[in-house]
Length: 164
Image (cartoon, rainbow, N blue to C red; front, side, top):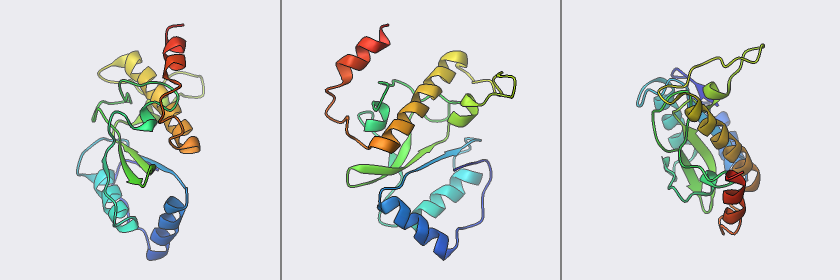
């Protein structure tokens, strides 16, 4: 789920469907592609998450969260822009079914039909884009595997792969 602007509130039925989806193992990645905290998409998304999962809060994910190490050991988030140096999420028990970014990760991944990058990544350029791609892979792996790598037994193998 991505957007720039505020959106209409979900219906009661849409909220219930999303609540069931998220509490029974589903996953939602959302991002504010403008990155304007407290405005537009950000405001609407936060409002809806409070309605969908009223007993849980959207919080900053700590640096040891599995999403930061599910495939790559990431040190930065990346994105088309650098709004927040972290991801936010809603965690239920040990699973984070909602992950939210304001850095426009998908904007950093976008290419036109000729393979050229659609957007510049500011202020960090290619390194910022590379971090966005790695984070995207981590989010995908996390969404499919949860926190099976929380035990960190795989870290030496990842570190070795990073040095290749």
